[in-house]
Length: 453
Image 1: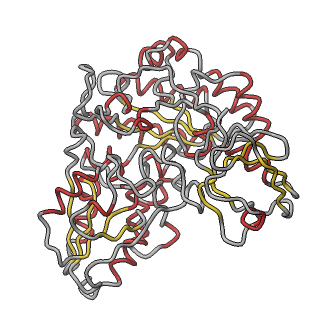
Image 2: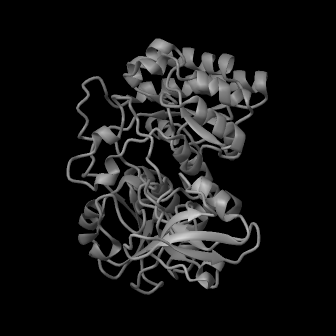
Image 3: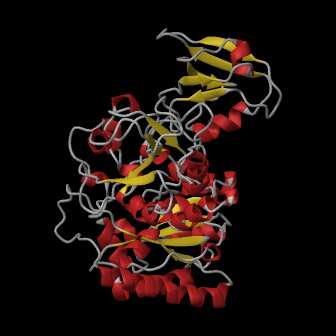
């Protein structure tokens, strides 16, 4: 089993004091070999840690004794969250975005996972088709929640057909097991027009309330289609279909409020944008538990930009965040960095995707010296308009035609480990940019420093 490798050390930490170095492979911790970062953190919580490390490719490991208090941080960040092998997905969903990636990208981006550990660590959605009794025992024993489960349809035959996997008809039994054990689980329904919308979506909403009322939330989101999709049955929603989805979700929110005292199901922001419908108020999102799934992201942004820092939720940087490791501060830490550029008195251009531009354009329209640059996603094409899927090539092309004397603000959702999806870095852009956390409060603060804002 591959060993975790040290990628960063906190200055003055017990690990640094003991002589651990960046690049060291951690072969064992107190005699145990962790399978993943979850076990790793449990092991390094111990006092007086004995670590066997392999350094500079040496065949034999060396023993390092680390003096620390129980529960004191070791001060080490490791290279990957999974040390054994990522549980890959054996479904073949027509709407899967991994199948819509073009050839020639980094190999790590093509890993199609269905791993409950990545669900716990990053909020990735799992279908549970490869979930086992041992997995259930570990989740329940170690209380690994919240988890995030793709439901898509509660009708077994529809779900199996969507996953193109016969186990899709039965794997939701594990959802029942987890809920019975009191594990917090959030669900997702990816709606594909003509497949699981209309009467099927209505049946799924009824099924969720009837069979899985203990679910914390269920997000209803549209499929994302790139120009590389080869599935003839997959197509974008029409405006009328988006409105119909909103009507279904709204109707079932009312039922759930009456029965459960909470809304349970929520439509993603994209549906409101596609339907031309107003974004609900903050109370309609009940704390934004599916914020990173695009549910309530617009409302939280607007509230934070309006002056409420408690609504500054941000987003997990990069669509493939787990693939690219994590910064020294932790797996969900922001990756915002600032680049030198024009003075803060210069005109400001906020760079974002087309979806973000549709929100920010009206919001910033009355601010002198501030404009929004919506970057078209030429790389993926199709319906892809979120900032998190912008490539460096598309951002560079958009910036190339812009004036040099502007301040350019770029949301950190575009980057993972300092790179765009196509591997380009900030240094590859034709203009200097400031990377700003993807929340309204951070943008408000960045604009407040400009005399023209």
